[in-house]
Image (cartoon, rainbow over all chains, first blue to last red):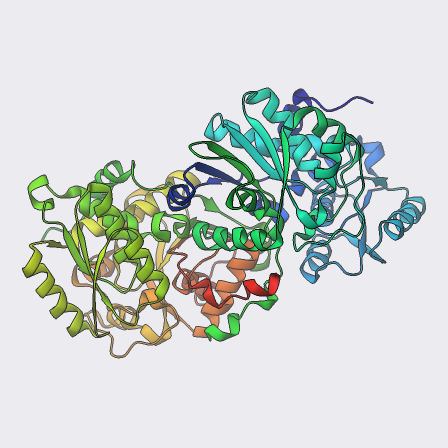
Length: 318
Length: 318
């Protein structure tokens, strides 16, 4: 099977450019002083649907021929990919059928519906998801777009790192979180081409460390009962993603739940932006000294900003 | 007295460019669809010290001659201007003496200290602030930099609207909140020159409506016991500011406290950025139908992002 190359990512970038935000890259002098390094945050929390997932979904949807596209697209997703695919499909004027675990956060269900996605709920197991999706695909004839184990999705995700390096120049280290590996595989391909001297380092929650274990065992080891507040990172690494990650990633490190919360809070307070726990995982690795960043220039891709703000005491302000 | 002109703002922009962030301008398709208009948010919550105030403070500090500057600067401020002046002074290597009401939010006290400002606390009345400041100025020889009623501060604040229009073209309406009037007076001067057909509309909390009343009475009417969660807007309009606002502002509208909270929540949820209540006041005016924005292109300056996140249930995530 052909693996994506940087030329595919560059093509994806041209394809999706009219539809995606070129998100800003932010930095905080205070954080840099505290952490003794130069951090640049690529703000995919400010991307459409609030996550980098829109890049991949958009590239997958707009890569299809008109004939393929007529019956729509379908997927199973715990959230951000679902919303992303729904919006991309609605931009192309085709239906999106989304299989979602009934336990998905409300904010993500509502997002999918608001973008016109047609949801089928299922039990929160991989088996239930896959069976339900197979049924939906058979009934509708829609093309499955996997959230990460998909050539075109990977190419779309690789455009975030491309913009980061285009905007801020070369880095010593480029970091992102790892769940299924769509973002990491795209980021690694881009970085190896545009910034070959940079280390590509991914961060993963200790409670969902299948990528860490797979990377060090040199074979794919799926998750069993992963548990983390970083709900975007519960999925196991995909096969295509793993093949790319093995070749083009320098290190995968793990972080504690407490570290994720601490990093998330620091980003909210210091950067004045809202990120979901998954986004905070690379910074957590820095706070927990899982890699040496002293004096280094580090690019971090913030993956998304979809947290349920229902809990917040907005009413106390009134 | 000479009032600032656009040429002064353009000069200020050159002066402060090496020190300030060129903040991004964000928009949300979902919000635009909901509100039936095209909104562009100039994100001064992402400015250094988390507020537009850094622009004015920076211009004031770097406009001083070396001789003037040696003994430092001083001010009284409820928060963002204090942090801004402290940082600007530390960048120039001169002391900043800050008189703060003892009731100021913790986050703002800590910010001033972290930027090297030297704080003198006083009672939370205008009289106490002014007396304490006079004493501090007499003892140190520092030059007072008023938070808004100051030529150079106004010029600095006018650079936010300059960047907004440079980045996103002409608008039908340009909006900002009004407290002391530093941001509004600068914004109005810039907009009248770069975008003369745009309406300049300010929004103010009902509970601190001295600018609204002054504007419609054509004379300065100071606040008496203002009360609003938009703590950046409690101050009364300054004299220089009012003279500019009278000439160059089209309308001032007021909003409810509930509207401010609703708008703030919408910005957090939809835009994925953290804004303080003062920033949400212009959007509150739109949500409360205080002006007609249907089909219009509207630029809104988000003034700052310094809210005390202590209250948030981060611990519940662990």
